[in-house]
Length: 147
Image (tube, rainbow, N blue to C red; front, side, top):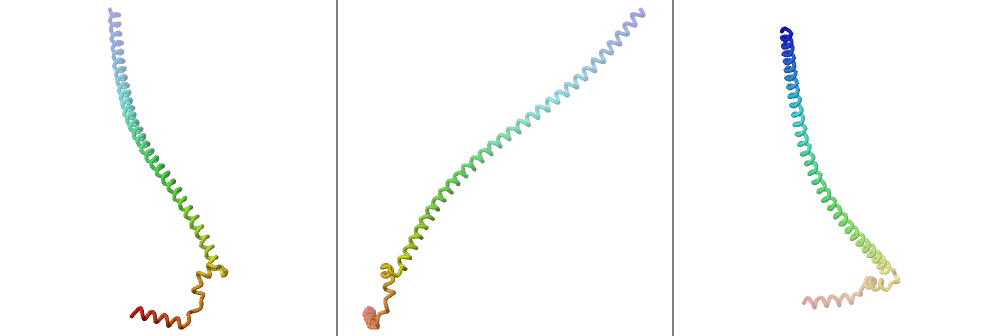
């Protein structure tokens, strides 16, 4: 009987040891489960924040692309306008240059002593002053007009 008692005590000790190990294992598993749950929750939160961040970045990129496209369109318009203005200025410069050459040619013709145009243009100023008899006639006509 003693042997049965010893075996029974041994079994109870083993059962107690198994129960203690089971409790310890359950506690460790609970701790591991809680740690894994916390880790999973942290990962979910980070994934949501990262997803929000990516969405914000995407929206910012869309906005920047829209602004870039608007600026590019505006710059292309300005480039076309500048090309048109440059063309207009070039044409005006050519016309002014042509007019300047014509004026120089006309000056040469007018100031040339043998030119008939020069004589006609400057003829009245090149004549000698009128005589005094003409001055008297001028005075008489002015007196008649005023009277």
